[in-house]
Length: 85
Image 1 (cartoon, rainbow, N blue to C red):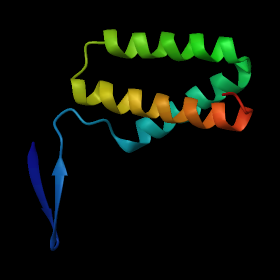
Image 2 (cartoon, rainbow, N blue to C red; image 1 turned 90 degrees about the horizontal axis):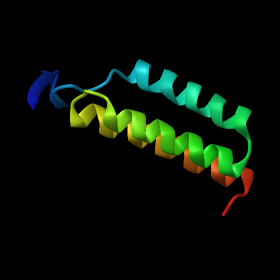
Image 3 (cartoon, rainbow, N blue to C red; image 1 turned 180 degrees about the vertical axis):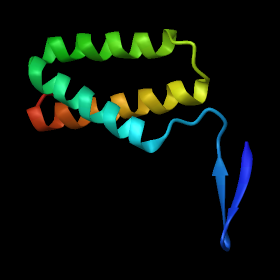
Image 4 (cartoon, helix red, strand yellow; image 1 turned 120 degrees about the vertical axis):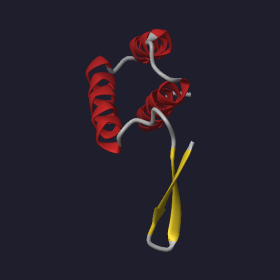
């Protein structure tokens, strides 16, 4: 982990961290995919396939965690909006 001093504040830069713009784009694409699938079973299968793909990718664990966190947030939000239990 690296420390980056900006002004009077200290920010932490994690090795292998994914740029925010890329995570936002991933959020948009995943959200659009859930909308186009629109069935509970299909969305759950898509969620599982995406999570499996992320975990099998040769990335740093920090990157995997960030992508999984975005995927999970989008899925939970979509599930809540759709009224699924």
